[in-house]
Length: 391
Image (cartoon, rainbow, N blue to C red; front, top):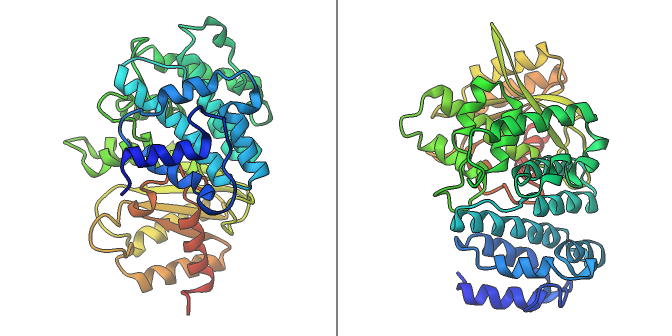
């Protein structure tokens, strides 16, 4: 593994010792922008925070981080590089907050991520990061009161949500923030995920919102760590955290919009999502709503669980369902207790026009900052289900 000095040397060689001085090409070593950014995100210290602050203060817009991200995507064809650079900017903010134990205006780099999503043609990524950016404005409004009306993020969200729905969302974020001191660094993803659940259920997610002692790692990883090491937490708490992790990862996957959990006296729907095919993630699913079922218990997926989930999907008249299982952490790569039986169950539901896909813990890990999120795992499982294994 490269040392920090070697990584910095490579990063400066791509973007200049002053950010924006140069732009990497699209061949040879200049094509490694995404790899370098991902390796730097593994470093626990915010070694590039001051670099990004200075870079963001350049006079010319085209020389600022977002300007370079646009040039990377349009002029160099480096969509992965553009996305990874925007993620690295946000990563440094999280780690700096952890270091100084104080809040920073994270709404700005999150807005850049939303704009990058728009640049590369992903409305769903644009929406997800605009929602986070809108929460980030409220997170900082005690320093900049004008942010009470929102920065640019609410404007971007107009194509997805009415003003009334945005106000409901922002009011809920404000209420969640009242539980914390103004100086406490928090994961904005925790505030967003709480939107999907009732107040009684979302408390299990908000309880992990503090950045303290998490090293700036993505919030989905914090949630998955808590699932694998519950430290005495109840099954209800662990289940809520697993559902929130799955929701955050799907919301960061091109094509998916996460709506909410649904509960009745005799039934529970972990999450309702909506899928729209996008060029970035051609999974093979039909456009429209789908259901997410999360199994946080240890053990492989049983045929009965697939049948019950499939029946629930048919009852709600959706065309697809995704079962997210904790299986995969132990006992090898196979996620099903009876692989042949599970495939027969899934094939039977296909005759009814229902596609059932399954993801496990291994496929969830380390996907938070990937441009395509969970799409590779979903696409692979879809091909296996529909066409069978590779000959």
